[in-house]
Length: 54
Ligand SMILES: [Zn+2]
Image (cartoon, protein in one colour):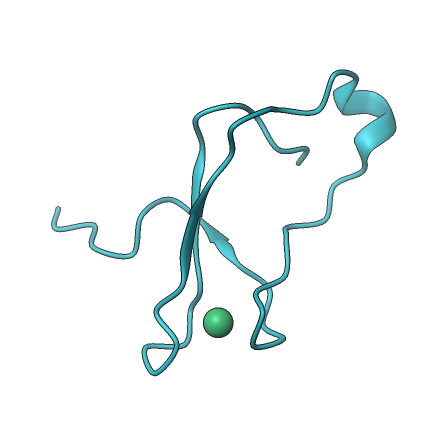
């Protein structure tokens, strides 16, 4: 799924804990592909904040 403005992605590695927010989404989602962004530590980032309580 292409990145969309305002989405938050977090690194699944608790030892890393990196989290990013998309400040500008893909202008054409159909052309942007479906890969998740990759963290600086090399892991594929997961959509949503890491601290999802419920
Ligand atoms: Zn990371």
